[in-house]
Length: 339
Ligand SMILES: NC(=O)c1ccc[n+]([C@@H]2O[C@H](COP(=O)([O-])OP(=O)(O)OC[C@H]3O[C@@H](n4cnc5c(N)ncnc54)[C@H](O)[C@@H]3O)[C@@H](O)[C@H]2O)c1
Image (cartoon, rainbow, N blue to C red; front, side):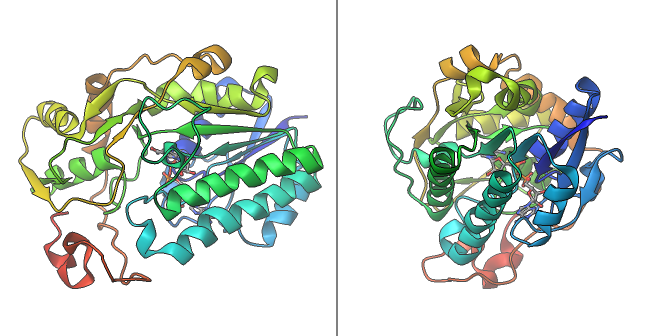
């Protein structure tokens, strides 16, 4: 009989692509997928996944865990709109922190072999990169705070309830099956959508911010290893490319890949200026191999993006807080947002 794994956020980038990878490479496992479809798409989910369209904060999670008794749980569900999180604080903590507490409860209750949680490089805040895992977290926005709180909660569950865990801190992951229709997140996907719709490619500030971009295909096996390798037990591990680019450089590379595009510079956002991680630990423990450079990865994603339906761009109809919000996200200005 097959053992089962639960993937939350299975309709999103990491979840759907890890499900694909498991179905291809781990025939002894059945994939149980959970997603409320708030930020991902049903089309992303392979038909062999046993799919539950529910929210991770819901009480139904208990039944699913009891029914399938998963060996490993990959908890990926979250709304990762970091820049918007100060304007949707309550939603951010409910969706990213309270929902995680619900998943942690069930992992403890049924004694899962390991919980893998995707935190974020957002926990590091404004330090001096490169960030290694021993760097003291100091997040600068509610999204990063929620991720850091989840990390701490999971570690406490490890100490008190003997829950085994691995915390992964991915960063700027991109590739096939990413949501390119959300106004507030996934910069490379936003640019592709803008270009496809004859809009200028928007950059917040002057584009000197630096980031490392990680191709999804390169992190799938390491994600699996984070659940199954003994050496990954109770480890916090950065996962993704260590090669940094300025946003302007990334923008230029994508324009070359797409064969055109203009850039529009918008108001500076509250965001970390330079953020890139170390990768030694992911190499040593998870066998991460940063195979795909940005141009090659973008070529693959761009080819896919052009085949996608022209879904309506996702914008919030209202925020919890309008005070201090940037002009380009103001509800009254939304019609003018170039995306
Ligand atoms: N992609 C990145 O660059 C990146 C970087 C750092 C961290 N992460 C983290 O990795 C995880 C996966 O990211 P992704 O890029 O695949 O995001 P994604 O938006 O593509 O996928 C997340 C999925 O979770 C679902 N979801 C959200 N809240 C839910 C809830 N309460 N209940 C059930 N389903 C819910 C969404 O519908 C979506 O399908 C997230 O936790 C994110 O914070 C991603």
